[in-house]
Image (cartoon, rainbow, N blue to C red; front, side):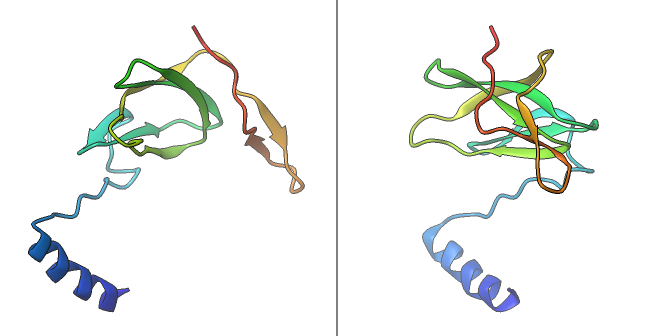
Length: 110
């Protein structure tokens, strides 16, 4: 990894780019924040929650999130502009190890 970083930094300097990284979950604020065009939602509590997010083009969606940071990358010219906890139970299931996990599809929220 150190060798790869040694190659990446000169390349970034030549291209005029900088590396932007998100803070670790313990150092990050709880809830929504952005670093550049990438959005993050840090769930500081326990258990699974449902979050609603808004895109820059007006679309919205929901996703299930466990504790920690959920990264929301831009989709071409569109990026997420907000995300927040909603008081509705996410769709979950129990995996083979007996743990509750998020299902792929999540309920909508007004």
